[in-house]
Image (cartoon, rainbow, N blue to C red; front, side):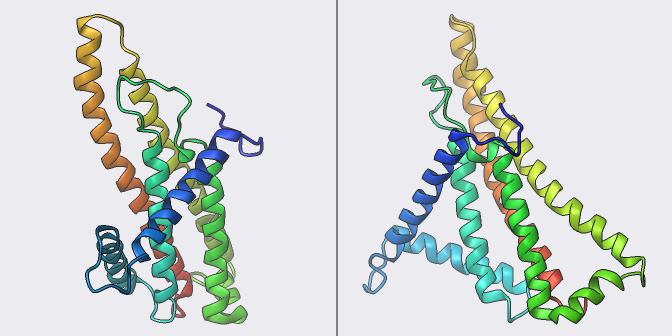
Length: 230
């Protein structure tokens, strides 16, 4: 596994494109019959997810920011779910070592974290104005020295976001690969079936949780930055 942030790698690029295509395809499928009286399964699922994120974002973000942030958060969550789950396929015992989650490569979580960092700064400038944005950076919570505090906070944020997602997804993949490459024989089969399946279920839950945590933190950071009182 390559931990580089600068070297180009084909696997995360290709699987990232596939993840985006899956999310886009699901979105198109969900709105395909949106005008019909009886919504389909994909539309029901998308509407439920949208309502859930609308309530979640509405409780955290300023009213002016909430509508656009809801759609962004839902899109990011779906993309992360698909990306995280990719590394869990195929099921234990089938093999195919070259399949990896895009988020199991450090460059992808780091890129997303940098994108979120830039969005947070944009939200501060847009909703507080350049003057309010600079005051927030240099004057709060401590006049003059506030810049040091805010700089450390803002720089730690993308690092923690990237490494939390990357570490959890990579660890899940590595353990799953170990269980599916158990020695031959009865013991190996039992390990593959029981331990591998249990870890697969556990990794699936972790994949969903990590996608939700990453998304919620993005919403929280942007909401705080867009808040004029912060």
